[in-house]
Length: 334
Ligand SMILES: [Zn+2]
Image 1 (cartoon, protein in one colour):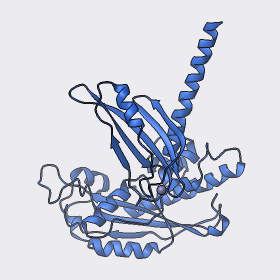
Image 2 (cartoon, protein in one colour):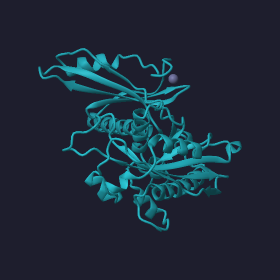
Image 3 (spheres, helix red, strand yellow):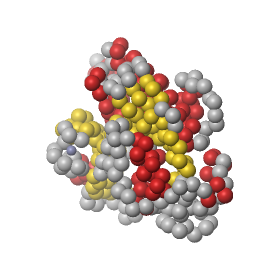
Image 4 (cartoon, helix red, strand yellow):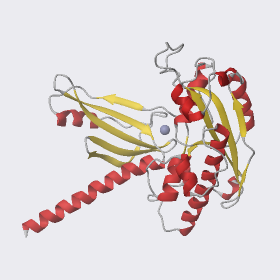
């Protein structure tokens, strides 16, 4: 639970529109480095005065004149309804981002719907010579909404959540500041639901993750990857990959095991904790080489409450199956 003394707490909900390269025109820059160039930033502050009282700010909005992708991509245009002519006006990214940061203030949780806005923001900062480090607290509204509103890890759209909470639709979607406003309203309703569910006291920390677990540090994208040697059998490759020592990718201390490695489909999954940096999940896949040999490919990365829950659910499913099998085996013995 968030301690009372943290109120008021400020959430900055932001939304962006970006243009994309056009496939048949040589791109002025590698699209892998810049998958989208920001042309609009919209944001709304949601101030939490108590678990039930919230205040919405007036929207922030800035239009950016693109430096690289100056011809409107048709697919993008269909969604956001802008033409190449519209891209000729607006501020330079450098000025726009300074204005945005200033408007944000210095003590807030940055929020968005999904994690694509944040990765696009990072790539744009980098290309313009800024550090790609952003605010160290980020909340993805989508999984929080999924959990508190519907108890699902299914991905929903903003429009779906707006309908779910019966938020009045006063404007079209897909203008950055309007979308940010809708998302801030969804966050408000989700927080109210979250605290109401918590207040009932019927859920445990395991079944209903603390709000804290939805807030991650987007600058900690560090992940660890490893590969085993090549073996002639799948089993040997798995055995070797599973031997890897689990250390936190940031501080390199030994991780404590929450759920040890278990087989799930064609992968192995696990869940770990670093005392300082939070929850991590591990996944090992067994891959086949062209010579029909095998190696294990492992990945350890930071996870939010929903992703951690996925691993717990898979573990539970497996245990239930095991119990069922044992039951059947017992009956046969008799
Ligand atoms: Zn650590």
